[in-house]
Image (cartoon, rainbow, N blue to C red):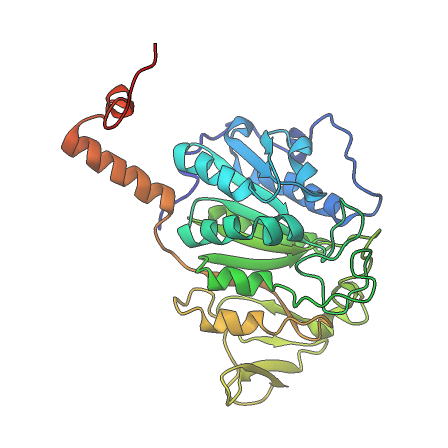
Length: 343
């Protein structure tokens, strides 16, 4: 297994979360879930021991996309939906960088949908954090590609008619090699997923349920309320039976139709989670348990498989071409074929 951080220079000094904080005033609405995610990322990054000048955060447009301003690393606040494309170029040309993409459900899944799926398909060495609050927050409360059917917003006063994207299902359909989901307020779980994502060779897609307390407050209330969260949250752990519930009384198994069904924990045929299975069918079935009511919601790593990263394959291809044909001549290339000179 290739180490995606092997070529990234290490910092011998001991780092802390403070080293990754900038002098910029953090400007999100009070109570926004983005604060919790920012603190979790700043607290986790010192574990990697990387030089800050070799860490890059690329964002698109949206509330989440202010993230690079608050990270004491290199950063790029790019254009709407194009962060994965820009980050792809960066990761492909600079193996000495750890490249992270911060995006939102509107930025990534609307205008940026094509860029997202091709980054996942190519398996570029990127870590994509998709903040999903199921609303357009920056533009003040329009429905987004993940808003539920019937959602009343400023742009859908009679209720949304659109069937929402499921980001996990979408990523698995694009053959992503690492797909996970976590929650902004569960710092321990969030950081554990980030650790695995950082060490993964290729594209890591981490969907983070993020509360927008101004325009879509309590969107994930069943997963956060102490009265209900243990009953509806399915915590995926590789190699362990998928058992959940406040008293660990429920479990999952395959139904006759091939989908997953909830059964008593002592039932036969209980599924053992295998995130490293090359066949994504179980991971996809798990992703389909998600629903607008969050009756049964898996969090954790759905898929974590090894396949060559695009940027590594590209560098190998270039090295082979140079070995066979020698270094290229850019001037000769630009002047070849049907060209003319204007004096």
